[in-house]
View (tube, helix red, strand yellow):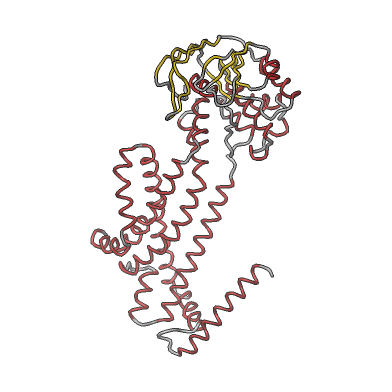
Length: 246
Length: 194
């Protein structure tokens, strides 16, 4: 059986189950039917605000993701290279990792403008993942290759380009693929609490407040679809990068 | 010339060199032969500056040392050609293809190390060591996995470079092939044999 057919059959199965459950419950407020959710979703797609909200959410969260990637990369290099930096930043990053997302969102609401909170949260989620993975990868670079680079007098730039970057690329790419999903989910959660003017999270929040369950489902589907698209796009881009010959 | 005087080195509890002294000549080919694990590679690593002794003196009268390791140590993400080019200055990259072709790898220039046989990888590592130049060439078991005929060709080719060459080998045939002086070693701790 071709793969697409298996996927289609699995989707049909779950849609049928959802329809049956909605029929059994018979209350739109608790569980709307797939048809009703699809109708709401199509209606949303017709409104310019829908596209603006989706685009701005993407931009905010992607901005946070990019900042987190940069910060995580910088910290990984510094902590792998300098013991003092490691002593300074490692405990801080571990604390950030262990702190509940909600605590940070509430604190961020006190510290900065509402529109910045989702980007900040995305950054905060991404930084430790990138840092931890890249740092471990830098420390795992083959010492035999580093000795070879020493013997053949590779300068710093050549050593970074020919030994370090290709060695760390695969785990670094894997960490980015994980981080993009987390950034997206935490960014949307931050939007729900910070309520920027045009945002997916804000719409999710108002759907809940006004008990518009089909709308809540429709926006959730948008979040899931965009998450799939982002992760696939990233996996594709990073896969291309990893296949590159140096 | 390389002068090693009263050098002591241990790795944890294992004493590899115990007040070891030796003088290696400044020209020609010298084969260092001895049982596995006696400390020959450690001696090379000391000469190349990869490790420092705990005590004693090492004086190396060469400016630039090229070292073909016991392992191939090729960059797995670079082709054979790029691996050799990596050790050459920008204006001399053309030499990489030439040396590889002379070592019989003209058809494998763009192959990754994972696409090469063990013997081919040894030759790429050798090409890299030769391309790097230098006045001392350290070869640690350079012909492992190669056939006799190829070994003869390679030994002749390397000797044409007219550099000082120190070779670690276990094989009596290889010692004959090089035709230079031989220093027999035993250990650990490393010491001169008969």
